[in-house]
Each structure stands twice: as structure tokens, then as C-alpha cells.
Length: 360
Image (tube, rainbow, N blue to C red):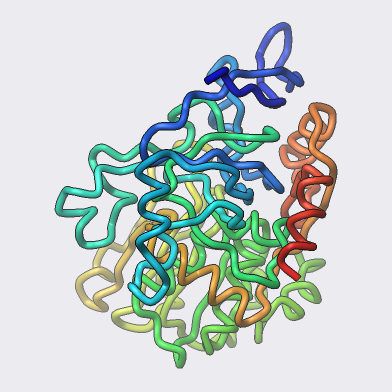
């Protein structure tokens, strides 16, 4: 069988960082692999962490259509149905699927067996492996593909595969009550989805931003209240706070906003690499405050997230463009400057239009 090639957008640092349109050879399908036609891929800040890898094709918020399956994946697709309770584990040729950050795991260790594949010691996550979503086709482990519900367009589904999954997982894994008061720090690519998920969850939602000009948008996206550092004096105590920003924070201040047993969950990594400054450590003892992080969802939660988002009409606010090297360069420049509102999605237009028609 002759090798399959595809158009892909390769990041190079020579002579300066930029994307180049290239023809690359796809790896042969392994037993559990799927050949995917990429419909849409959105841009995430995490993509830039891969730019030091010469020749990488980034993009880890991907929606595509299954074109072919490896022999074991094909057998699985014929033997497993939704009635078996494994939605999202098995896919069929023609399915529209999402994928991206978690590439593979052993599926045999203690963590995998309890549904925490994202922490498997043998996991492969972005950017391990050079070929991801900024391409016309790619190859992916079919066991790490997640069916996109009918009615959810690929361009709106793509940002859910990392940003949406991250915000959903904070609520899902921590068993946040629908009666909880939830704060979201930062109204950007992550935070604007966090507001929508928390509102649909049933929570009272408080948006925190350093910019007054985001108030109207935050309220439209699901916030009941909007606060800047200067306007939180009358704010009631919170059960759960999600931090989405990469800037340094006054953690003691935010801990003071939590109820006893409250949780501060961070998904934003500080860019400045400074030590976290927490002046009053007694809050962890006297008020049982918890400080934790969270990572992108594992397979089961990914499937639930997509179904939940579709059921509740959760959609990212996007800037759409056709996938090209120039669009990638421009989009990452805008992201670096903080100009994107709120997620850039690049589409392979002919393929994406066909997928939308097929879903209707």
C-alpha cells in the first residue's frame, strides 16, 4: 500500500518563527488507529509551548471525520454500540469526532482503569508526536476520539476539546453542587467557557476580571455578578473559584473570598515562573481551604462534556478563518497580543461544509 500524504502547516524557527505549508507523509495506520480528515482546529495558548520543536504540526483542539480505521479499531467499531455504555471509546468510519490533548495511554494501569487516563505514567500528551491538527489529514488512536453530537458544528466544537474540557472537568471532578457559588477569574479563551458551563450547571456565577470593559460580555455569557479587584467589597463568600489566568495573583485575597471547605482550583500556569506567595497558610487548617490544580478531562468526561455542551447550547465565541500558513501566523500574533475574542478557529472549508451538511 502506497504511503498517504497530506497538506500540513509546519512550524519552523528558521530564519524566524513562522508556519510553512508542506506536504508530509502520514504514518501507516496501526491496529487501533484512525485516519482523520480535519474539519476544524482552534488555537490554544498551549500550542506555543511546542514552538521550540522544529518541524512540529501543532493544534490540539481538533474536530475531524473518520476516513479509515486500523484492523482492531475496525473490529471494535463493528462489535460495540452505544447500548454497551462505552460512548466515546469506539467510533465508526464517517463519524465526526473531536480529539487533541491526550494522544494515548496504556489503558491497563490503576489510573487508566479508574478513568484517569490523563495521568497514566505512559500517557502521550501534546506536544508528544509531531503531527497534530493544523493539517488536512492526520492519524490518531481511535480509542482517544470522542463523538461530536449532531447539531454541534465543528468550528464550535473544536475549542471545547481543550478549553471547554478543562473548565467542565473542574466542576465535574470536584462534584461541584448546582447550588454552589462559583467564581471564574479571567474572561478569556478558558474563562468565557467557564462562565457558560458554571451557569448551565445551575451555579451562581461570579466573573472576576481586571478589565471593566468585559462586564457586559461576562454577564451575557452567564455571570450573575461581575467584579474587578476594586469592586468586591460586598461580594458574598464563594464555594469554588476557578483561576484561568497566567498572571501572578494575590492568593490570600482570593482565599478570603472562599467559604470554609472552599476550593481554589487553578488551570492557569504563571508565566513569570515566580514562587507562589501565600502569606497566611493557616487558612488551609483553620478553614479547610483547598488549593489544587486541574488538567484536561479524561475520556469519559470528554464525552460527557460534549453532550452537556450540546444539550445546554454552550458555544465558544470564535474568530473564524480558513486554515493556511498566513492565517496561523496572524492568529498566533493576535493571541500573543491579547487581541483574540475569544478563540480563533481555523477550518478546512470544503471538508467542514460537507460535515455540517451530513449532520443535518
